[in-house]
Length: 212
Image (cartoon, rainbow, N blue to C red; front, side, top):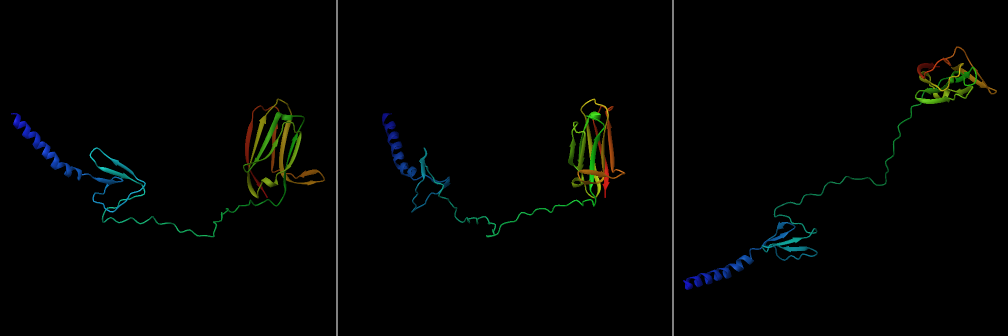
């Protein structure tokens, strides 16, 4: 019995001795994850080397690329040709000028007394605020021409109740002129707008007015 065990032991030892060189040559070599078994005459610098438990060797180096036999290297992406010495000019869209009226238009605000009507006014012409008339202004005169165009104009008048003072406030649009510090406005007016002190709410009126 003892002799048989000894015979098996020595047979196993002999088998290991025979297979050990085979196992040593069964190691794989990988470069950046690609197996490169059989590579010769190659030196790798500035790389990281790892040997796993099986004896496989892993080499890592971003400067090295492995191309399989028969594979073609893809061409570099096409580059867009650029012109030198030229600067693209910014194109500014043309500005559409409104046809101006041939006559001058003025606006006149008149109260019947101090803070009369208790209203302040805001005049908006073609989307732009042309004037704000304070409750404390007994009278106001201004040139409306820069805000209007020849033809139909959208004019909004907003009236804000700020006090319970009686009296009235009048706003007139019309053809006019300035002479010697005075304003002259022709009748009939293009617009004659009034608010009274007996009124208590705010108002917003929109008019389509034609200026020649």
